[in-house]
Image (cartoon, rainbow, N blue to C red; front, side, top):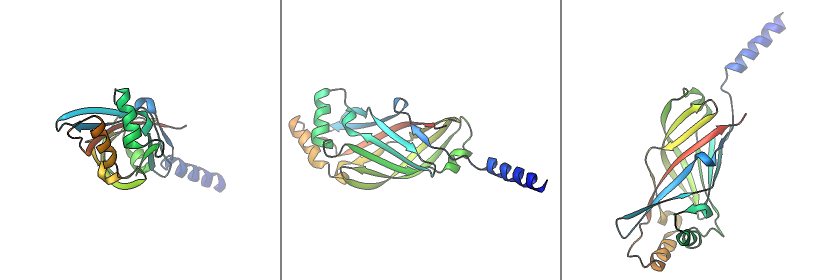
Length: 194
């Protein structure tokens, strides 16, 4: 009898613990976009078509952006961005990592959103820089999580050695200026693995 009680107690303790799960990024329901500014006040919106990522059981979130999937709406500009700015033949991806604790996810009520400042790291052009990412995290359902930027994260080309590429783009398009500072926004949808 004592063995049965001990087993039931252990089982109840186990069931009351937060459920550790891996969350996979859904590319079709996710987007990372950025705005470039040329000629001082002409802004254009672009995005990436291919993202991969996951939130691991230890809370580490990682999103890989395929830079060759950049989509500016103009094919020749896509080619120039890939070849001159991102140099995708050498650096095919940008990677952002951060941590979202499983405790935070488990305690988030269904259909509720909560603001969280993620401390992240961006790897781009073989350089790494810490970034602060203000986000909303929404538990859409028990199996769907959305992580959305509250405001754009400003990425400066100089921090990642991309200013030469910006200069090349400016020259080939005969533009008086292209801003080195680029606001980046995102909506990331993660699906819980069963």
